[in-house]
Image 1 (cartoon, rainbow over the protein chains, first blue to last red):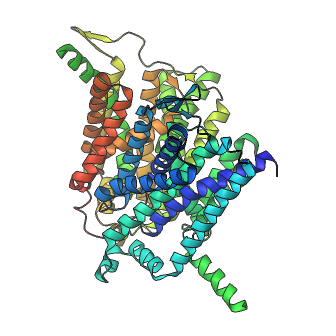
Image 2 (image 1 turned 135 degrees about the vertical axis):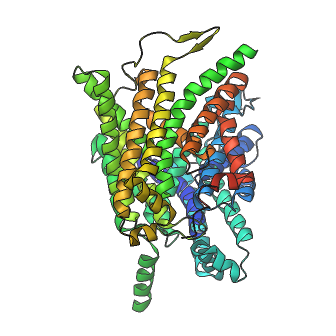
Image 3 (image 1 turned 60 degrees about the vertical axis):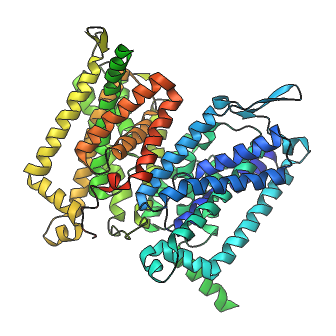
Length: 298
Length: 304
């Protein structure tokens, strides 16, 4: 495989974590404009731990996920009781605050003759743990996809379980769910924490792939993109968000059919698609149809 | 010390007047449709670029330029409404909590069109920055030791005029009556023969026209345009709308002025990054601690 394809595929894998994070909240009935912040928290935490403090990547990734979950609880605890769009606005404000805090974050140390660590708006250079250990791009891509498959298996298993049904029920009608004895607030906080950890995992992998991150990477555009990925791909199955990422990054970045007007074509296609399929390509109905077909044959 | 305070207040009101005008258009759409139109700022940017492109190719006066900006923004707004919002009206009934998938779909679709507008603008005018003719040639007004930009007076006057006009439309015309009926109970409005969909289109056109006016005045007082105007207008309009308590027009003006004041003072004392941080913190704290402040205009609605 050439470097270009590896680059595109790696990016697809990385942003799938973020799309899955947005998807998890969407099926529980919450729209977050702020998942990019936890992606950023993961990237900064993981990057600092490996580059500045010399912690091995697996440990740093775990720590990043924990901090992503904590940050999500911190944001979610006071805001999850807000309704619909108000929650979306609160997460947007929180995420922009996080981005500005990244801009204010300066913590550099002399390592091997050069300054390493976050330097405010100048960004954070030298996250080279993966690079220094001679991991080939192809191997790193394989690592990303292995983790992604593990997460997906977990998702698909949860969605078939009682917990998955419960999650969709609080998404459909939280008051009805609460009347059936479901602790909606606790469950939503758990969902927010899991989604935060998932985004942070994507972030730490992103930081070590790029070796350089800056606060601008984690702006509101990334958050809206992750929502769009989840919605375009479909809210019926965890494979939906992946399809969304593949469609955007694969078909759009990977091809140059439309030249410089490709955002015009793609933007129009997305709007028209949502007219006909407001819950995405792989929505609940499509998933049900596919599943019933598959099981009739076997 | 005191002189700085006064000067910062004047600067804050200047920026705040622009935010107020942006917030009024944003609030109109949110208050009536309960939808967030992410491409609101992009449609304004499209209008401004339309006017800029014309001014580069033809000799036109300021008034024509203003009309072209408004026309471009209304055209873009109508396109957004037809493609992103009209198809999702049928499923307007929202669950009691949480967001309806139709409102997410409308929002994501409006985001897709934002990308379209941005690319169209860059294709038409590929440089990063273009000059925009100034609305006022002279220097700032001297008020004793203080300076006040004349442009900000234009913006403030426009915000006040627009609000007065909107108030007249909403409370003195048949169309306004229909709008208020739709805001209160859409189903009942439909039952008494109001064409809800047509009310939505006209509200969108009205909001886009206000946005276009705001865009023209902002571009003319900055004397330059960049494609970033779209994102800037959407975010500032949304923040001012939130500060004012979503869904209230006087609130939108107050929210815009408040945002301008908070930004000007915090920038003076703490620098540009803290300026944004404080504005977001204010909104986050309001939402988290005083959600009733944000929802006070919408909770009077019956739970339709």
